[in-house]
Amino acid sequence: MPFDLQPTLSSAHLRLAPLRADDFARLYAVACDPLIWEQHPNQNRYQEQAFRNYFQGAMESAGALLITDAASGETIGSSRFYDLDEAAGTIAIGYSFIARKYWGGATNRALKTLMLDHAFGFVARVIFQVGEHNLRSRIAMDRLGGVIIGKTPIAYYGEAAAINVIYAIDRDSWRAAADNRGRSAGSRATI
Image (cartoon, rainbow, N blue to C red; front, side):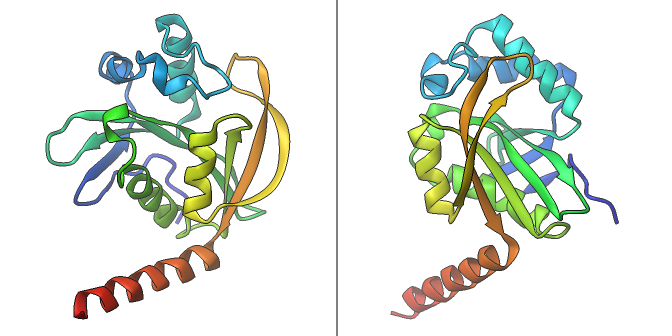
């Protein structure tokens, strides 16, 4: 079965669905917050024209997902799968952002868990490209178990190139960490 770049994925808290052209207004209502982009290499994405460029790239990627709150249906943000290399067994996850009211809790981990679990049904390694000065995202990658494998300049869709730190998470390490989290949760539950 081929890798589905735009799956519908859900958990108790989140729903991910293929991004559609008519999602622009509701996604921009989240993205127009300048603080979301303050550490990103392209800090002007809160401006409508810059966000239109981002959104066009998302639509053309054929891997973009809309993130909503599973209970309320509220739009939370977006992420995407891209750069699938079947021969190497890799795919990238990125271009992610979530509304600030969802920062600091379990939302990012829940989002990445849904995406990583899906990806590891098809590939052995997931790559993340994070702006060198995007400390929030770099801390989140460390918490997910991402391993730095390099740095490189990356030009986002129609935007200037910026240095990105490249992280990788391998299927075996992700599954081992999930097993450990499950055992820890089970131990706490019996106390």
